[in-house]
Image (cartoon, rainbow, N blue to C red; front, side):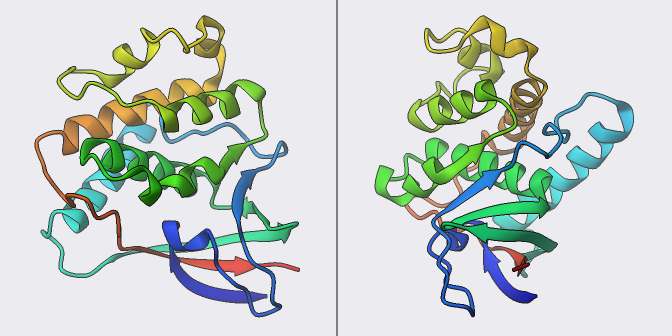
Length: 199
């Protein structure tokens, strides 16, 4: 098993010790739905604490980069298939999306987000694809309302637990980050994870 310290963005294009290169992240069908957006008291507490840690790191309240735990996975045909760490990866995907759109980052700086895919449900994957392409109105109090009002958002997606959870997290990110200008045109988010590849 190889272990590499990296950031979410740097995963895409990461070369492993065996010579394989990661070009995409694929949440496999065997994984459970995205759960960090559930509205239970315990999950809400954990989510708020996690977002607060990310916020402090990205706004300079904490000097050191956030160091998250291991992400375990295997690489098949250039796709990183996480066996553990799906929840953190999905939250980091949403964080990078939010910051990129909020800061009007050049599209080529966040093209890597198009290589993050969900295989648990077609609706989850389709939602992620559409999300990366849209540019929300940050004046809105709840971005989830704006997103669900777009003509590309399918009503049936509200029955997808992963999509529902993502919308909750997007709203929480918006409440936390909406008044902050963090990066300008730079999307180098220093949140360190340890990528452990199993071959």
